[in-house]
Length: 128
Image 1 (tube, rainbow, N blue to C red):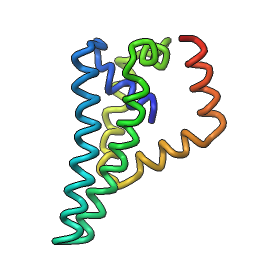
Image 2 (cartoon, rainbow, N blue to C red):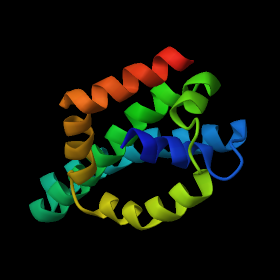
Image 3 (cartoon, one colour):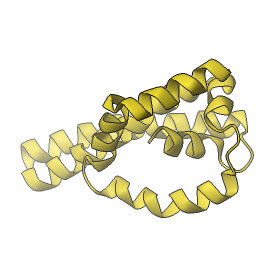
Image 4 (tube, one colour):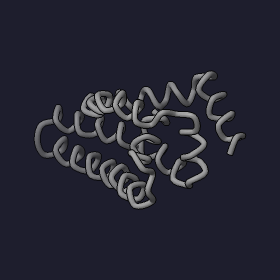
């Protein structure tokens, strides 16, 4: 999920403007989905409220990664040696996972807790 957020932040050219827009999208999207989900759960259909809040959790996981990747050095370290065009094509279909409540949040949690992913993140941080 960290790479997913990094590719979304970088896009095809890695401009600062794009990083700011995507970071704002993740942060505002998380807050909006959680708030709207809570309102709908309270005053309407609890199923739709839970679905929206689950999607908000997924956006929150991406927002957390985006915040840590926002500095240029962190983003470049995460994407060093990566064919961004090929990876963007691969992850474009994976964006549909954002509509499955909480799946991105669970994947991010597994990534954070799994030793292989933690080691990869540490190695990337050492390179920067």
